Image 1: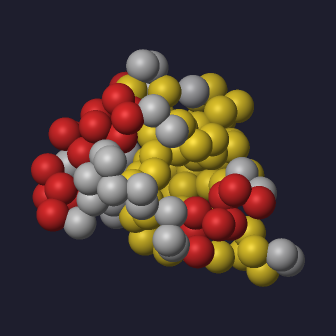
Image 2: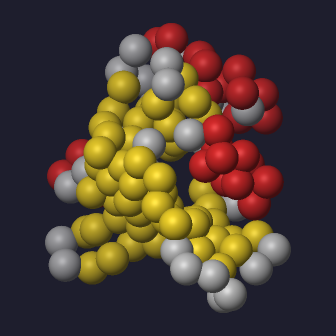
Length: 130
């Protein structure tokens, strides 16, 4: 898990892929946090990405840095607990101007049944369950 989080944080931006009907949707994200041993991301309930994940929780994230990339595939499950939201917002103080754990919009999801695949142009892919 530490290796996955380190890679994502060093990359800075990762791309989250969801599905809307039969159409893939991809957008940049930057929040990633570990809370209670699980990998979390954050968004707002008013966004389409939230609606897509509630209909179909299967998702992937992908990030690239220094000739290597990571893909994390699994299900993103909402955690409605205030503690999980606070942990994310504490990890990203810059979000606190837009989000609040009690605003009814802040939403955090954790990966369930996730596999991270590390790849590069010169080596064989390596997978890690998280």
